[in-house]
Image (spheres, rainbow, N blue to C red):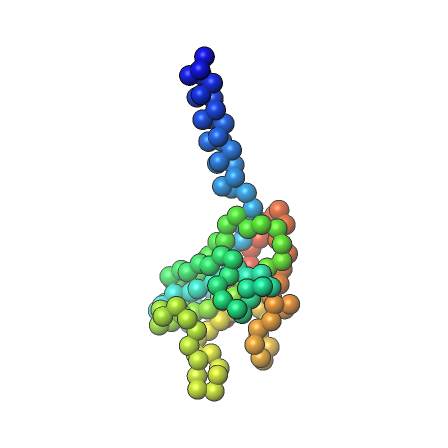
Length: 139
């Protein structure tokens, strides 16, 4: 009887662990206008606290095939987020700038707002609930 109870306990713990791994929302991001297959695309899922201040709450990178990248953020809790992505053409893991302060490498964000000036969270933000989301970001 102790063996059966112990086995059922392990089974229950395993099932609970597996259920916890798949909680949250999945966000799939497609970028299909990368100008070359050199380097990688880096993307970060940001809250208002992390936007333009450092790494996001989740960060991904991907190689580029035929100018296209598909990235998937998983287990995203409900809340307000923005996605920033950049083409790290020289694979140095950071944005490179011209002498005048303009970015040398392509970038984009959720909302696809490409007005002059630095990106802002408000124009890129979106709400995450219980449904999976899909975005296309343009560089």
